[in-house]
Image (cartoon, rainbow, N blue to C red; front, side, top):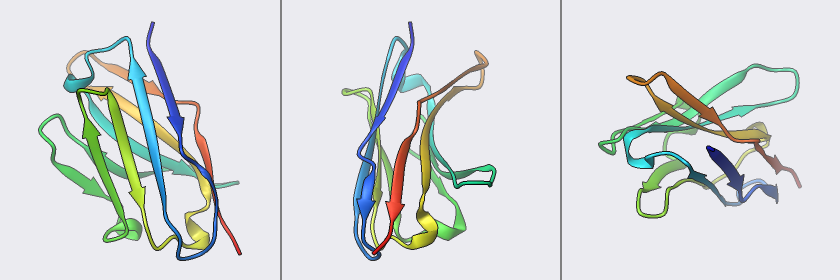
Length: 117
């Protein structure tokens, strides 16, 4: 059984930092492309960042230079380090694991990030 669990969300002031974690089990983690997405109230779910099996990263323009995605295959965990947070970063953040060849696609339950003074 595959389990995907995010953690690390919370309330932070503008300009602050948070680190999100996403731990997975039940899969061969190193074979999956990993991603973070976010969904603000009333809006669609948007891509934030991805990291491939080889470690290549991709970011939404709105978070470039502020967010960093990384993976630790030994711990079956993907991270999203967020700095210089803005009010517009407020959203539920979701972890995604995708294996394009197998067609597997898994989501976590989401973790709330609120940036407010």
